[in-house]
Every structure is written in C-alpha cells, then in structure tokens.
Length: 616
Image (cartoon, rainbow, N blue to C red; front, top):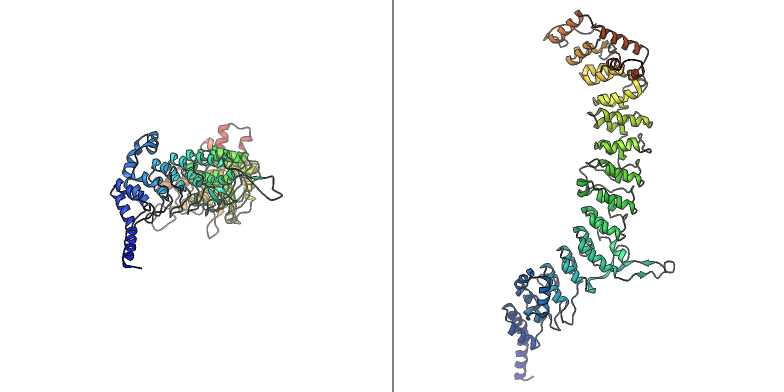
C-alpha cells in the first residue's frame, strides 16, 4: 500500500475514533447545532466515549434540570410539549432511527427508561415509549438489582408512569409463578413481582392497574387428555404467584402489613386464601399477628377470609412476629384470639362458628383456654370455659399442667371471676388436678397463697370431699392447711378455711416434736399477731399448751408481744357475748355433723346469721 493511501486510512481511523468524543463533547456543552451536524453526517448515536456514558444518557443528564422544571406543569401540557414542543438534544437522539433505547449505561448499569422512572419524569417515559427509533423500548430489561422499570414505578408509587408502562407488551414475560410457567410480571433479584410490591406497599390504585392488565391476557388450555377441558387461568396464577424465597403470595404480603383494602380486593379477585408460605403460615395467621390487627382488633378481615374458605385450624410456624407474647409453634388462630391484648372475644366467636377446634394444642401442649387464662383474657376465657360445649378442661401440656394451674397462677384479685372459672370446670366434669408436681387445686392455692382459688374450690366440693382427695403431701388435710396458714400469718387463707367449716380449735402436729398445736398457738409462736387477734375475736379456745407466756423476753424467741399478751388477758377476763357463744355453738354442731359451711344457705336461718356462721 502506498504511503499516501496509508496516511489517508490513518486519518479516517483517527476521525472515527474522534467522533464519539466530539459528539459527546457537543452534547455535554449543550451545542445542539454541532451535535445535529454530526448526527446528520451519519455519526454513531450509540457509541460512548472510553470513560463515559452513551450519547442518549449524556443528553438525558444534560437536560434533566429542564425536564424537572416541567414536572410542575399539568399532565396535558407535559404531553403536549413532548409531541409539539421544540426539539431538544434528547429529542434529537431518542428519535433517531438507529438509537438503541435499551442500551445500558456502563456507569449506572441502567437504561434510560430506568433512569427516567427513578426520576419520576413521566414526559421522558412517554418520549421513550413513543420514540421513532427502530429499536422499541423494552420495559422488561432489568437493572443491576434485577428490577424492571415497572418495579421502580411501583416502588415510587407513581400511578401515571405505571399506567404508561403497562401499555407496552414487554412489561410481561414468561415467568414461573411457583405453580406453572405463564405470561406474567417478571421477578426482581429479591424474588418479587410488581404485584408483590404493590401489595406490600398497600397501593390499591396501582394494584388495580396491574390486575386489570392481567385480565386481558388469554387463558391457556392444558393439552393433556384428562385435563383438556380445564382452562388454566393466567390471571389466577399471577395473582397467586409466590415470592422466590419466602413463597409468599400477594395476600400474604398484604396480611403482614394489615392492608385491609388490598386484602379485600385480592379476595374479590379470587386469590387463594389458604395457601401457606415457606414457613407454613397462611394469610389468616399473618394478619392475626400483624401490628395492625394487634393494635386495632379489626375482625372484618378474619371473618371475610373464613367465609371464603380459610382454614380456622391452621397452625403457625415459630411465632417470629409475636415472640413477645408466644414462643411456641403450631399456634392456631383461636390461640391468637385468646392471647390478644384486647381480649378479642368477637374473633374467638367467629372462629368457633367456622369450626375452630377449641382443644387443639400447640407445640408445648397448651390449648386456647390456657392462653386465655395465661394472658388474662377474661372474656375469651369465660367464653371458652362456659359457652363452648366441647372444651376439655383435663388436657395437660408437656409440663403436665391443666387449665386449673393457669387459674391458680394468674388470678389473685377477682373473686367473681374465680368463682365463674372454677364453677365452669366443675359443671363440665373437669378434674381438680393441677399438675404432677403440685397435685391438686387446693395445694396449688395454698402454695401460691391464692385464697380466692381455695374459696372457689371448697365452695364446690366442701372440706370433707377435699380431705378425701389424695394430696401431694400425703398426710395433709384442710385442718393442716389451716394451722399452717396461721403459722405463716396468711390471714385471708385462714378466713377462707374457717368460712368453709374447718374447726377454729383444731389441733395438728406441725413441729418436729409432734406436739399438737392449735391455730392460736402457732400464730403466737410465729408472732403473727393479726392472725392471733382474728382468732381470739372469733371465739377460739384460749387454752395454750405449747406457748411460753412471756413478755418481750429477748432470750426467748417464743415470747409473745405485750400487745398480744394484753389481748389474751382481756379476752380471758371478759365474758364472751351471747351472740359469739351462740355462733361458736352453731359452728361446733355443724362441724360435728359434717355439714360444710358452704351448705348453710340451705338451712332455714336468717341471711345475716348465715353470713356470721361463715365468718363474714
């Protein structure tokens, strides 16, 4: 090759290498005339510089402030400006027949459409969609996060841009929804479709647009012989599409966030109400543990889900959403209603009406009744104990505790409620057992100093039936309990036991030397002055066989105080009133005939006298 030809070729090559730099420089400086001259001369509108973005992106970035100024204009004016306005650098490039609208910027790793949607510039999105380029704009291209322009528009909650993008067929692709492969919205890297994002964010307007776009898709017929007449609805498969990693549907995501309108709309569209996610939770479970439901106790959604076929006996996986309340798995919706901080009896009723099993147990063997009692959900507990005919009170959890155990542990200050609970258990043939460690309700009541439980149980069975029950402490009976209550100074328990007919003068062995001691003696020895005074005021015997009568003797720990000594002296020197003598005689007669004081109301006695006999 001759030297002149070689130099010519070198010059042409140098010019070609210079062209991208020159075109990009013209765009960067905003020199429309020079840029147009280069493009009209046939220069490549897609070639970028060695260290920069392609011309389309440079033009977009250069005129970005101008486009943002137009955002405040009305929607109609923006579109009119796109169609009839003066041509800009961006117009010049985007409408070039050879412009690659889908070219990815090497710096930001996104297309011009991604960038326009991120900036929420609808006018630019429209320009890209209506470009005269021979390469149509592809809505389905993904950025480095695997997001399409539609993902970004939904994330930005930009309804108008979503509407524009949905007009392009490339917004859909062949995807595997977790059920089958069909036309639908593509997944991002996180494994979510645009539908999932809309439901998670609670944007009903965008969700409606996405759903209506799917309604226009044709149904697919199964080609197999046995299912040849069945139509696999593409719309339904998309609506129930599972997220890639957690296998949640749109309904799951809306339920977690408590988006009521979204859930209602999805159910109207026949979304599957009973599908389970990767953790085994259904939308019903996820809604019940959502912060929204926990704060508001809105029972309209659970009712709606149950009416449309949700399983009322579905169970949870480990309760990560409400581990502040429950750390068990296999928790049912009825258990969640029972543990709800607002004592959600309406939800409990709805669940029972739809077939919830009141006796189902969680992974620790607890039933809904146990949860209601443990969380002090009084209304739910009363409903399950009294109104649900199938409630089994004798079920024991893995600790071998029955529902009486939870009553004993959690209720110390409501006598009426205690009477209701215990009455319901006995009316329905519930057992008196509490656990294998503390055998009966009486022993648990004494151990926990729960005099209300002691009163409620004795009111039902009487002290004589109570003594026939074999206890954990083999030789203990109600007389032992009375003396030991006096020894510990627990006056409310002393009052309850006396009110049910335990003899105020009963003597039992409570000390190592096996001496028989009365309640008064042990209370004096233990310096329980309030108990001693109560016993004296109610006519106990003043015979003291095992108490040292001394006054504040520092060398004698058994010495009684001056106050009690004076009380004893006064009581021994003052004749008892006729009323007190009569009461003591009546009580002794009833005890001798083994008549529980809880039956006194059946005798033909005045109510005031009945109350006095019962130390009330």
